[in-house]
Image (cartoon, rainbow, N blue to C red; front, side, top):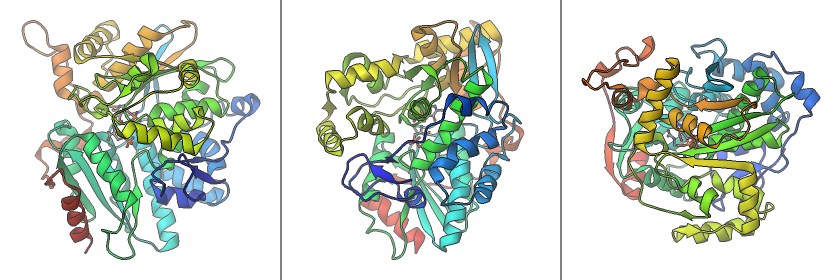
Length: 470
Ligand SMILES: Cc1ncc(COP(=O)(O)O)c(C=O)c1O
Ligand SMILES: N[C@@H](CCOP(=O)(O)O)C(=O)O
């Protein structure tokens, strides 16, 4: 199995190399040269497998023997042993043929744990074998940061640096990152927004000369192929639990960097019958505008009640465009340089192909609060603001009501108490329900915090990293 860059000008890499690479040297993202695919009979034979056993089936073809089956089994077992629910990704029914897939049962209460627990153990294994030390660098709008820190904090061969946009993540999200006081964990609050953090991470991957000798950067964002790969698994898991592959299933996915829904698209390409894939966005709606009106232009980033999706430049959209443009790296280079000036237009044929693959919908904050309240009143189920956007998008765009619709629950509501309070406040100002943090986080608000606020300037960030690694 080889991995190639979406921009066509970087060397092809093996599995272990791609896990350590992050961004390709030509600025593109790595994808498998050939996607593994499974027959319906093979997928059907996986019904009833545990999440871990299913993960092995889906992931093993990408690894392609570079890591032994026994070691891969061990990495997967360690990745999911800290989840609070034995099903790992339980399904909860919220309406007729409508389900929520709870992806927040991991240690940091967001879907990021699925890939980042796996990636942490995978890196630990690869780096120990190579006797190599790396610097992990990541950008977060709130959830990737804590999940990555949790995945890497115990790795002897990793120092981890996480940039979050100062004052733009929830207090729970910030404290989940900044109260980890391990010597190898460094939190930077950047005076900018998430796009600034992500731009800085990508620029740092392109030129790593600021690092001390012998160190290289490794990515924990979804530019790292291993992130996407691990997220494909739960599409298979949910489908099998609801009668797939004998019947199709649809998915609604709250979307920011396009990694999660891209994993769903890949599951479909790999043979899983998926009827509808719904892109659900908040007011930062570039992906919805692109699919519905061929308007892929950058607007100012809006600060919403679903902060983790406050993203304008969606990294993984490039991976989709690579497929839609017939895997021509030169076309992607052209489009991406067009987009650098603020906007890009898709060819009509490409657009209609994209529309056949994805539905899309946009929700503002007022409607996000309304759907949280509505679902709570209907079923007693409490949605976090990101998941709520997925549920509303599912209901608004659904075509076949006899096909199960699975809404990906990407975060636990306790991460966003302010939004929940606003949604469930009654006319007399009291709140019906306040979501509690799980017991392992009961003292989060009294733990000591450590982080450094830096201005939005790459030289300052590089100096900080360099000194920390000295
Ligand atoms: C809670 C939550 N929901 C949804 C998303 C969107 O996921 P993606 O960036 O993979 O599209 C994110 C982060 O991006 C998130 O943290
Ligand atoms: N929502 C994310 C943003 C980063 O996305 P990623 O999937 O590329 O890591 C976050 O919570 O940090």
